[in-house]
Amino acid sequence: MIGLLLAAGGGRRMGNRPKALLDFRGRPMVEHALGVLRAGGCARVRVVLGAAAQEVLATAELGDAEVVVNPDWASGMGSSLRAGLAGLTADAALVGLVDTPGVTPEAVARVIASGADLAAASYGGERGHPVLIGSRHFAEAREGAVGDAGARALLRAHAGELRLVECGDVASPDDVDTPEQLARLRARS
Image (tube, rainbow, N blue to C red; front, side, top):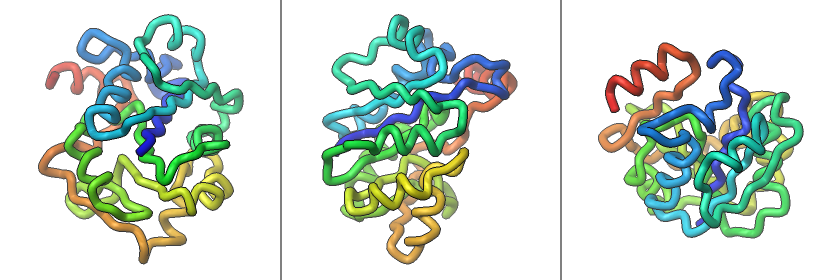
């Protein structure tokens, strides 16, 4: 299983501070997200960077993660999903977001263990992250990934096949988009 970590955003609502570089427990947030994917069962991880990519590479410990730099990162998450899936050789990719620090290795492991070709963590029945995309869906996922939509079009088109895996008891779907949300996260950590 390969983890695909989308970490390219510029953090517009965060005062143009790239989320990959935000401090979380004393290290850049990208390191935390990478560690969660690895601890949850992703043997390989591909990290998609964009905004401040060179600073992330110089600052964060990414170990043996494969790094893809998305030159079109400013157009939205869809371009990062396209960049991450481009040329990917794997049976499936587990897509995680750098700005969801409440996602835990247990949630990652549950989604992987679902055995589904298309699965997503759910929180109280609501679809969230991470999302597992089987290789037969890679091309369609890339085609539908526009703006900030990511895999949304794919998941809607295959709603009958999508397996929701409840993770609300082991993780939180909350993302960190604003300085206020970051402050609340730091107060809880």
